[in-house]
Length: 342
Image 1 (tube, rainbow, N blue to C red):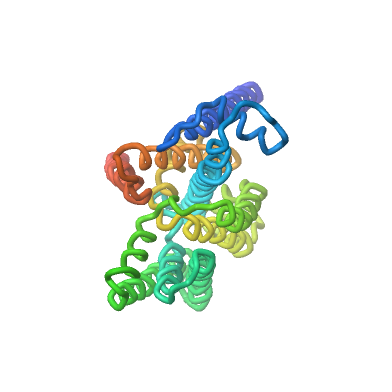
Image 2 (spheres, rainbow, N blue to C red; image 1 turned 120 degrees about the horizontal axis):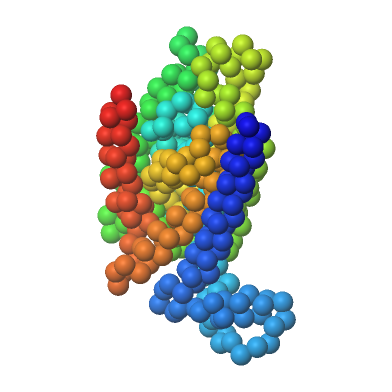
């Protein structure tokens, strides 16, 4: 009886995952249609094949827009959404708190400080990306190393030190904005902090996608151990689990995901908080199923949000603003739902 029930759940999960992948593919194809120069599915196919010697009836502008503008932007949204969602799901399990987001250890604030410092010094886009990534990694490393010195439980220490590092980095960003030239540099910093994929290029995407792939691969390989980290720390240790080792693996992987996502698209909030809850409602709490579902849902969600930001008004809305508008009501819903259960 149990075997039949387990087999039925597995069939349902596989079917659900297949449907999600098909919907994701449809969203990707239709997203090429959004913008000042719409590309139909036929044009998308012809532009893609043109790279491999296809000589059909297709305008050169369509090929340029496909390869240099739309494709890097859509792929960036896909990987940023997947990365933030997987990092959020991992942290929610590791800290045993459904209201945790990927920036709990200060990665977003550290990346913002690094990017703001690079913009203040007139650095190129590539250096801004590199500074943002280094700032995010440094902030999480500081949080982890300081928490190791605490006499309290490491979970509590990580949260407290992460909050402290976040506050310091935000103060640094505020100071840089205060001394920046209001006619030029301040506008660049503010625009970057709002989150956007406007300046995404093939080069910037290729640079950022490598740490994302590494982080996603690590979490996917070890995803079943997240189930054990959701247990009480002493209970997990009694099962022979090296809690510190796996916690460090997931912190490193989630930091790679979050830092790379922020350095590519700026501050894009709420994705890592919302999507794991939606995935959990669809596939359950088992992280062997939750991680793949979160990645697919997160990628599709951010592509849709980017389409909205590009098409809702005559001017393009900052991506971080749109995700915040959609995420804040969801957060209020979560708080009310938890209070009703209590």
